[in-house]
Image 1 (cartoon, helix red, strand yellow):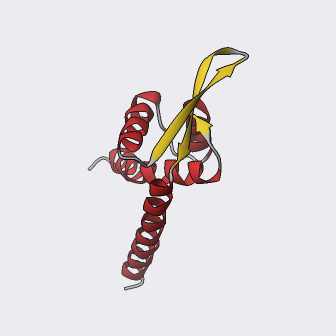
Image 2 (tube, one colour):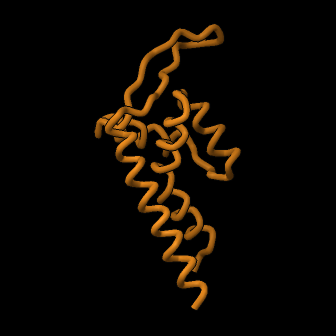
Image 3 (cartoon, helix red, strand yellow):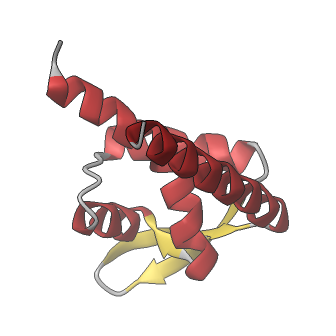
Length: 108
């Protein structure tokens, strides 16, 4: 079994949760999201992030706006929607339940 593959799959599994959590605090553009995720040791590349952002937007969990940049092309700033906030609240409950369940199994 490949440990690195398992770790990567675990990180991918929580990526949606992490993106919504970041955007619940402030709006951000894709490069900022990548930087925040990397700082948190959640390695992610543009090829993973952009399709996920598109899916979250199409599901009504995110919206975006364009803003001119003084150092290049316009930037697309993502923001969580009210539907996204409600979805995130449910994800947090599920995460807490999952962490509790995993911790319980490690005590047995």
